[in-house]
Length: 605
Image (cartoon, rainbow, N blue to C red):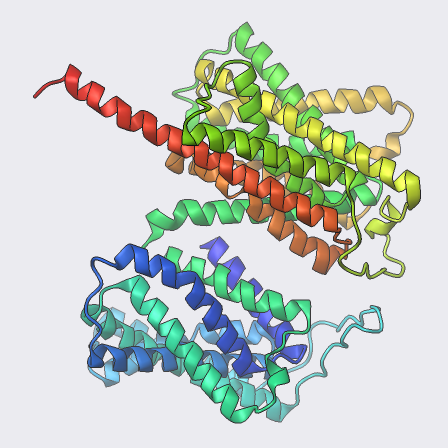
């Protein structure tokens, strides 16, 4: 639910920004619903093709009104209210929907109300209090509790919109009230539609399609100019794609498919966590934070977070702590968090966040090569799976070579931030000519060392987990060991520089806490859950998502340049990755299929 609320808040803020930039409300609705249709239609077709009921005229009428109330009118009134008020105000107003739904249900006699019971009194009191809150929100604005920060940004940046007038505020409030009413009617309409047409995915896809046609028809009738359909700014493109795909995934997750869609949602969340972590690390390193100090503090935060979880979850099942286990943990802590993070930080400092995220997609390919070299894995060259693995490996390695030695021309203009100490241009990106190329190659070699080291560490973990299956305790101990190791290395290298241990800026503090608690702690728990539910191939298949998220942060927030070589190399690496993963999946399926007849022969009925 925290993830749901976080993404809903981000969606509202993003839509608010896009509307302020001048994006037409009906165009946003039309394109948003169109993208959602393209995303959901194939899922609906393949999932419900044998169970989908017949589409009758009655069902079409239900779908038409469902699309009108649930998408077209509901979104239009919400966008109208959002544009004339604030994002916080709009989110607050949406909490009125359950109250209005209850009132409409009572009026239509869908729900009963016993005024003499405690539950009935609570409902009446809650309804009256909610309406009192709405009246207060509408007619009483009050004094500002915060001062508006005047942004000293570049001249081409849009100025903050003027404070809405009292008339605009009231109009926005009325629009949000209409939005809540539309949403309440839509919920009641959906309760009937789902009984008549229980194919959930198909009905939603049809609703998206019809609402996109409705929105497009209204736009064409009101706005005759073709230019309104052109998305000219990055925030408009991001708003359309993000609010279409991410929000739809979230709706699928929360609409009775919790258990089924939880691993997918967890992997999307994990990749968002990784993307934010990569961007924060890049900023902290650009500000001059010592790499070993960052590793030390990060592992300390991870230890503090994971230790209580490990203690209470595995106190009865934790194996005995032997000398052999101690050696494994020591090496695992040294190779994993210390050396791997150090090489990642060097590569991240000398290249870009997008480049570093792209290189991490090489991990399954490199792990496969090392497993093959150590004979942990076999390769059937003549089989389809074997050919896919070989092709994928060669394509990925070609992509890595292109990423390293071919930078190419810049595809985006790097908007220089005046006076921004955290700008990447201050730390290596501005180095031109031969020196810049040397730094880029050194960063690439460091990232390759990181991927190879990570692959070796995974093989070490495979043996270690068999000897010490308490996963949470092992991770907590490993974080503790790496904390001491990184701290000792930092003290031995920088003996006289005590000031390096002081976290000077907000970015450094946020990076340490976020990377330690959210990335190393929560991110690890989500990853463990996904591996347990769907296996390692499923989790690896989502790794390119982090690259896409990082690229978005790089372009729109950090203003890093995007190079042609990075784009071409990324495509090759991702194609190679999916070929290797497909080969692994086919190999596993063949092994399971061949094992079944053998089992039937051993156990005849």
